[in-house]
Image (tube, rainbow, N blue to C red; front, side):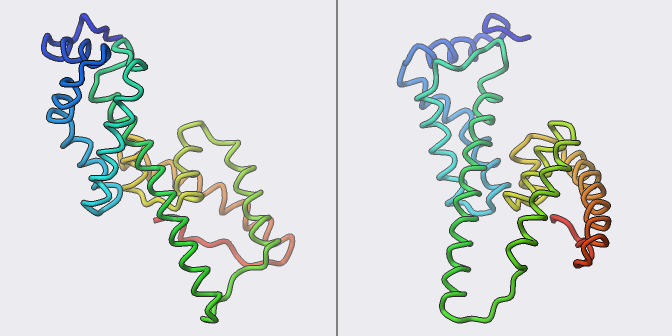
Length: 200
């Protein structure tokens, strides 16, 4: 693995100053890697103001947790992107909650809305949870982001750092398992057929 002594001289000095609490190093870190973090946020969230918020939150979190940076585990850029991905996931979850609250408000206002009975939704969640346990950790992470956080393929790739093709492959395998399970369970209880569309 790469240690701090193996980094290029400028990166080594910057990493040492940053971990040591030199405040000027934070500005240098932002100037060097802020654009990279912003591009990740923009690719996942699709809005400049959201990407700017994620970028700011990433560098604040990095500064507060600077002592946790371990050069033996990777570069500053990789470490920052790991923080940024967590910030993106958090922001996407907030946006999903806000959308859910807005939809609930619309329903309360009396706009027509039809949804499955609660037992059906609970059963589907249990089916998903059971099948997820059969997947590898990486496959399970991708499927969870698609089903439970409702992320798109591109967003999942941005959050996990996986190639887009790998994300799609994991989802295809996961959906194939779920489709088979839904078809079997659906036939047993006489419910609706499985939804073949899957996540985007």
